Image 1 (cartoon, rainbow, N blue to C red):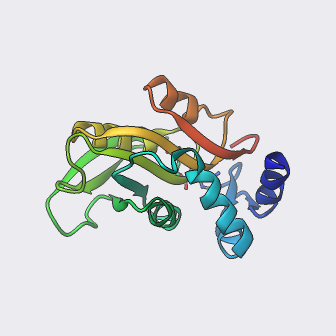
Image 2: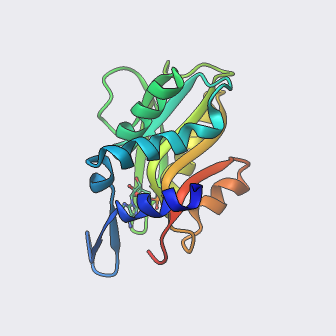
Length: 181
Ligand code: AMP
């Protein structure tokens, strides 16, 4: 039953070849979000292992991680904290730079968004290289938070990001895999 459900969920993802550049297949979750059953199934499946346990905050990565992370936080009755691209958060922030294919990027979180000892779940739509999620883990751990898990709807296992996170001691939950980049 679980396997069949995830097939239906996978069919709700729209794949767009050569976007945003040649060779990349963009895995578009807007079609999952707009389908009521798929959206609920995705959120229920993401939270399933954590229901009943102590979680203090869900941290979502801009921008699609906000949509899923907000729903996950609501379902688990936790707080939600945004991790944003540099320069978007209004209060004092802590930031973390990370390498991209060309150049670097930086993510930020409010300095008081999590407390030392908080048990946090990290949420985003997709993990590819794991660069963004690794920076988010380092940011949260630097503030003293415990990363209970990192959750993604989609894994691109050939790129190795989920494994990279596991190597850092982060339990990773993903709902489906796609081949390639
Ligand atoms: P990475 O840091 O390489 O793991 O990239 C993860 C971030 O980039 C996530 O926030 C994704 O939304 C986005 N992303 C990377 N590759 C794709 C893809 N093929 N389709 C859709 N989003 C992607």
